[in-house]
Structures are given as C-alpha cells and as structure tokens.
Image (cartoon, rainbow over all chains, first blue to last red):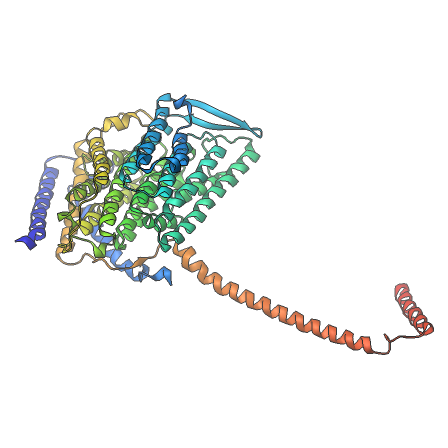
Length: 77
Length: 560
C-alpha cells in the first residue's frame, strides 16, 4: 500500500478529471455560450481545441528533439 | 522629505550601506528601505523632480497612471524577494538584489529617455552580479554574455535617444513609432530586454544559472521594465501584435523538451511576455489594461513558481526533471504553493491569471483579430503543458522518491505563502487590481461564457496529458541541452569566426613572410650595389661626371 500511494492518487485524479470533463460537456449542451467568434461557440469546441493542441505540442516537441537536442556538456566543449 | 525622494533611491542607498550593517540586521534594513521607498507612491501623479544639466532637462521623478501599477508590483516583488532570501548571507548578492530592484523602480519614474538610459544601465550592471552569485564557472560565463547583451540594449537606447534629440530637439518619454530611424533603435533596445524572438537567448541562458534567490529577483524586474517601456512608447504598434503572438507560441515547444525546470520556467516567462506584447500592440484602453494587469499578476505567480523551484534546488541541489520526482511527500507545502502558482499561470478561474488574461483575449476578440486570438488560445494550452503540468508533475510527483528531503526553510515558505495568497486573492477579488489599472475598467471576467470556455480548454488539455501518460506517449525527461537563440553567438558565430580569423591570421603571416623575403632581396641587392664600382670611393672628377650625366638625362626626360 505504502508504495502505491502515487498510483492511487493518480487514479482518483483521473476519475475526477473525467467527471469534470463530462460535466463541462453536459453544461455546454444546455446553455448557449457567447463568444467573439462563431467557431468558439460550437459545442465542445474549446474542449476539442485544448485536447488537440496539447497532443500537438507534445508530439511536435518530441520530434523537435531530433533537431534541437544536444548532449548536456554541448557548450562546455 | 522621505517621500520626496525618487522611488527606489532609498533601496540603492541602503544597498551601499549594507556592508557596514551587522549581518543580523541586513534583511530588516532591506525591508525598511523598501518600505521607505514605497512611501513615495502616496505622492499621487505629477512631475516631482527635474534636473537641468548641460542644457538638458532631465525628468527624474515623474509618476502617472501607467507607472503606479508597475511601481506597486515592483515593491511587492522586492518584499517577496527579501523574505525569500532571508537566510542568504551572501553580501554581494544582497547588495546587488536591492540595488537592482531599486534601479528598476527608479526607471519606472524616469520622464525622459536619458534618465531612463541611466536606470536602464543600472539595472543591467546590478543584475549581472546576481547572475555571478550563482558561483559556478557556467554562471560566470553566462553572466559575461548577459552583461554584453544588456549593455548592447543600453547602447541602442542611447543611440536612439541621441538621434531623437538631434532630429526633433525633444527627449521626453513620449509615444514613438517605427517610421523614424531613432524609433527603430529604441524599439530594438526595448526588444532585447523584452526577449523578442531571436533576441531572447540571454534570458534562458542566464536566469537558470543564478542562485535560488537570485532567479526570483531576476524574473521580476528586467523584462517587465521593458514591457512598461514598450507600453509607454509604442502602444498600438501593429508589429508588436505579430511579435507577441510568435513569442507566445514558440517557447512552448522548447519548454516541452527542456530538462532543467528553472529553464522551463524561463521559456514560460518568455511566452507570458508574448501575451503582454500583444496587448501593447493592440493599443486600446482594454488591451493596455490587460497588459498591465497581466504584468502585475505574472510577476507574482512567476516569482511563486521560481520560488518553489528555488526551494527544490535549495534542498535537493538540482532542478533537473530527470533527477527529481516524488517530492510531494517531503515538501508538501512547497508542492501546494507550486500548484497554486501553476494554476494561476494556466489561468484557471478564481486564480489571478484568469482575470488578467481575459482582458487581453477580450480586447483581441473585440478587434476581430481571429488568427491572433487562436494563436493565443493555443498558447494557453501550451502554458498549461509546461508550467501547469510539467513543473509540478516532474518535481513533486512522477514517481516515488527513495531519499528523504527536508521541507523548505520557514522564510521561503512565508514568501511562497504570501505570493500564493495574492494569486488566489486577486483571482477571487479582481476589483482591487482593476482599480489601479491605467484606464477605468468596467469589465466582468466571470461570465458563464468565459468560465466554461476556459475550463473546457484546460480540463480537456489535462485529459490529453493523462491520456498521453497512460499510453506512454509523453516524452520522458532526458539529460540534455536544448538549443536556443543564444546558440547563434555561442556556437554559430564562433564556428564561423574562428576559422575565418585563423585563416586571416595565416594570410597575414604569409604576407609578412613575403615581405621579409622581398626585404632580404632588396637588402641583398643594395649590399651588392654598395660593393660595386659605382659606390666605391672615387675621384671628385668621376663623381661630378656621374652627377652631370644623371642631371642631363633627367633634363632630357623633363623636356620630352
């Protein structure tokens, strides 16, 4: 049990986030959000946008390593 | 009398007196000097001190609706830095920190370009000692690069100001544009300190090299002073919208792969400056309010994040993500404070970032700038990635930790606690912040549209993170150096310059060789000539004949 603390927390946290995410989508169906651009008013648009952007950033970052990453002592040489 | 002094000057005086104050009273004396300096803020708006020198009117103490919010937050930041560094007995660092903060506050109250230049250089020269106090070889090298770049900025400012006086006869700190050549110089000077794209290398290079306390001080003043200067002289310059948008987006990718968490925060700082620069570029009352509000709250939560990482560095000895993790068990308070800072910078509703960022986003929406709007929306997801999740996750969670670590010292906890309190306080009661902004605001950040939209963005981005971790798609941390724009002058230019100069040197040596051969040749010939019969001791008659002959030949040539 003692060593599994972090895993248990992670499980609870994931459940919590999924619940909140679901709730936010339900709210989005019940109200009409006003935004500056019609695109943003589409139901679930910010959610989709956030999810896709996050994945995009991480994936692009991962590939950027090929170009930008050097050994830790790169500048000392 | 006390309050008629230029704000910040008390701090500089205290900094000079610091060596003769017994070490136990140094921190209290520093606090006292900040308090004395802050009394000037009660003076209201107006010009309080001018000085005529060499035919110039220098406005040394001018205060208006733009200086006030910056002056308030600079004083708050100074207090936080002093409390956070209460345990710090490094005299040089204490002196530099106090003088640096004082110079930055003084710079806010300069009413003309020449006074601004003096303070501008003062912040550069004092802050370089803070980087030096990092006390490693790499900190020393970094400090030298930092100094060169900062002084470059100062020189550009001086050139711009001198050209401005020559061309217009005016040196007041007024609105400029990029159509004049001096405007471009001043714009670049500010741009270096505001860490524009490609001029940003110094920031990520030097800030993470400083001591735990030093970085907190550095993060607050230099860049925000540049934001203040841009807001004063270039509001509504359209170029700034584009520059700002790029600034919000590109550091995001660097922050994902950077291993040193304090460097991640430096990239994040760069991205936050982008939001402020966009606000200046739009130039409406709403957007300028947004910039000032964002600078205000940003100083607090960025300091909080740097403080939490400083506490980790203080206790563990490193901020490299690859060597951290699991600290939540041993540093629970630091963990909570760090998460509060992370939620503020990610702009969760009820945290300070939300009430400030909303102003800028609304200004963009109101202007119909759809592309920039979505770039900033994208950058908001990026902020969540690197500052909201990566920092707390890799430092305090990620995996269980085997070796024990102590919680941060009490003074650090107090400073972090105060900053965390301000983050939530401003988020819940934004009206106090709004009341000190340059223009009167009638703005409501907590509408159902705003809150739901922002929460959707953030919660689903967190979901994306959990998804990526679950399927092992999230990149693990690797010990590495990530190339940034400082690569240009650390590797590329030396890479080109060194062979170039070496070859040039070779050519010069060859040239000298050639010269000496030629010289030997001439010398040899003349020696031979000296021994020949023409030069030998002759009779006067022969010499006379020779001279007449030569003269005759010359005469003939001249006639022809």
